[in-house]
Every structure is written in C-alpha cells, then in structure tokens.
Image (tube, rainbow, N blue to C red):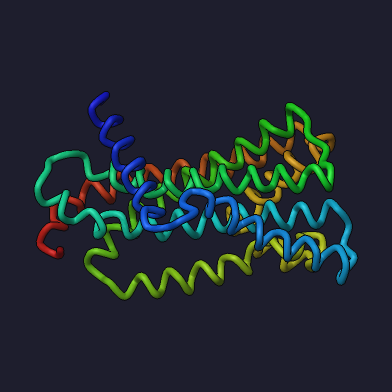
Length: 254
C-alpha cells in the first residue's frame, strides 16, 4: 500500500512539473491566471452591476469550484490515455492514474483559493469554525464526486473517443445549470426543485454559506449536505466497481 502512495505522489509531482516545464513564469501562472480573471469579474460586478459584496465573493467562489470540477473531470477522463505507455509496461493499480489527475486539479484549486483569500482582504467575509467545516465538507463532496465520475469516463473514453467532446459540452451545460451567476432565490420554486437535482447546486451553495456567511450556518445545513456527500460516495463506489470490472480489457484499445 505504501508503494502505491509513493507511486501516486510520483505521478502527481511529475505531471505537475511538466505542465509548466517550458514556461518562464512556471508555477506562478497558477496564481496569475485566476487573479487576472477574478480581478476583471470583481471590477465589473463592483462598478457596472453594483452587486453587493456577498454576491461578488459568492460568484468568485462558485467560479473557482466549477473550474475545479471541470478541470478534474477532464484530467481524470484523459488519465488512462495519457499514461498508456506506462500502463502497458508496468503493473500497478490503474486507479492510481485517475487519482493523480483529479488530485492535480485539486492542487490548482488550492492555489485558486489563495487568490480568493486575497480578495477577502478587500471584501471581508464572515468566517466561523462551523462555516469552515461546512466548506471542507462541500470540497470533500465535490472531490469524491469527480473521482467517481472520472472512474467511469476514463474507461468509456478509451473505447469511445467522441465522448471527449460530449463531456466538454456537458460541463458547459452543468455550469449554467448550477447557481453560479445566479442564486436559487432568483429562480421560481418549480425551477428550484429541478436545479436542486444537480448535486453541485447544494455543494456550491453550502460552500458559499460556510466560507462567506459562516455566522448563518446551522445544524440542518450539515444534514442536507451530508445527504449529498453520501450520494457522492455512492457514485465513487459504483465508479470503482465499474472501473475494476472493465480496466483489464483496456490495453487492446490503446
């Protein structure tokens, strides 16, 4: 087991370095890209649309989380194909490759949260211990969900390459089906019920509540997010079963 963790760490560090190998600024781009994008969004919503501070910070956090979800799904899906050469030569649990791709996306997310922290200096948020715990529970949920989905999609992508384009379109639809630029309260009740079927809706909503308005966190928030967390765990469990059943036959499709 220890050897597998070492292998996972090796995959993560190697891929992370390769992403910025030929770049003059290297790892600094991880902070510069979100900083530039968030600065533009922050200025537009501050000076043109005159939105309140809670909305602006909620918008930034929502974009960060959806960027993580999209990047993790794409990297997880491409993982087996990108490591085909290693997979064909070395025997090891193939799941490690998937975990590596999703974890790299999580590292980018952490750097994005550093940028979010910078904006918190200019637009203070109300953070409490309970709020931070709720936020961490939301992040754990989305991480587990992306792992589960990636275990499915990585296998399907090996056999059906067109799924890459379908997933990109699907991620765009999911982005707009998740309350990022709008809030649930803006929608009619019948539309709210449909939007809540998307697990990302409650994940993003409670992440915002925990980190931005932490003083409003209640016990029932943990209970509702707990249900979503269990659903995400179920997706991961089913993904693992599907992956283990199909992974032995992928070599013939490389």
